[in-house]
Length: 123
Picture 1 (cartoon, rainbow, N blue to C red):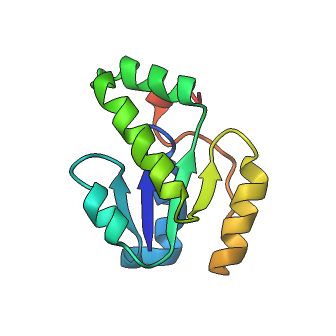
Picture 2 (tube, helix red, strand yellow):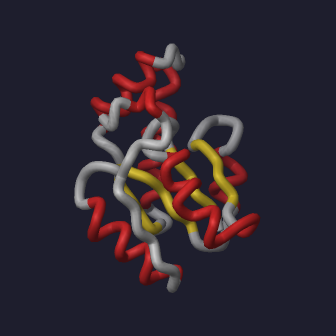
């Protein structure tokens, strides 16, 4: 099982939510040039995150991340969607999406949505 994400879209949040239930069965990778071929080759369940792209880009800027890589990450994310991953979110439609993932995995997933990383500004 893989959690494949655009950086700053809830990767740490969902890793910490899922890891206690899935342990080492959960592989976590960002959608970047260095990981894309491995992510594409994955044949098990794929989970990805979704976040308002403006908020994501703002987070990249605040943390000094190279924003020139952002369009590539979005392209990889778009390609990933064609494989029908389970999509979870930290902002839009998050409760329904979390419940769908919980049902898919047959594990109870509950959260108070507190950001894992204080820098995230929850948005």
